[in-house]
Image (cartoon, rainbow, N blue to C red; front, side):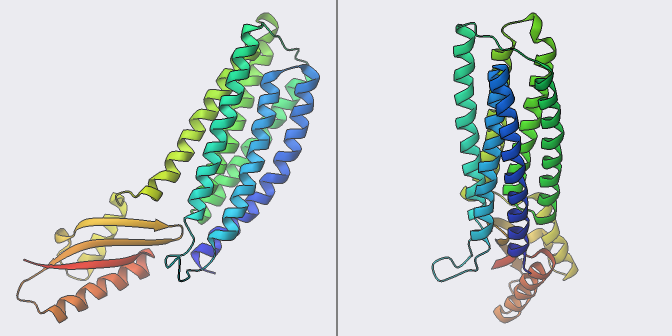
Length: 288
């Protein structure tokens, strides 16, 4: 099983688990929100459902991102995973805006909500379940390296945080009619922050970014092991296609070295980079 297939496996399994749990959690919290008249609990319920929708997108991304390279896509379909992460981020922005607008409207109309023991139980259950889901998604991300799982984990974590905020509001809400509207605004802000983080982490690899110092140092260490001039390495560019990564850089060889010799050394460095870092390297040769 190659790296793309491993990513796909974790994405699909995590997505299915998240969809089932979030749909059940949505139904539970939405019923409690309607019963209590709490906008913040209803907002939190829809946030849980959005987690379910985003997990469906993760499943779709997992299915298509494992497709092998073809004539039209010589580097594979790995960036589909990044696109799914971006879509999840856009969904979060839409949800955050919707409930921010509703919260302002309710504050202006001085609309209140009634909280009860069921509301408290609903929030405690939500906090526990969503944090378990977040930890599971983070674990799957560490195992697979799939950015969409990282995005989904933060989606779960943000839901857990909003439930904590709402729980605090329930405990002090009896003395302040504004608490439900204010908490809904706070929930919206948390959603916006999560959305920004997800979108940023998705866009950077899509538009291109400089290789991390960790990767550069690893390549330099390999270069030293081959008794080459590691300090001559420069002009790094990296291109990430899901599980497939391409890197290009320049290396300098003595001007009295033949092209044949320099080419053989560069090929050796490319092979070592592929075997040790799972990165496909293309090296430009320069003389000094």
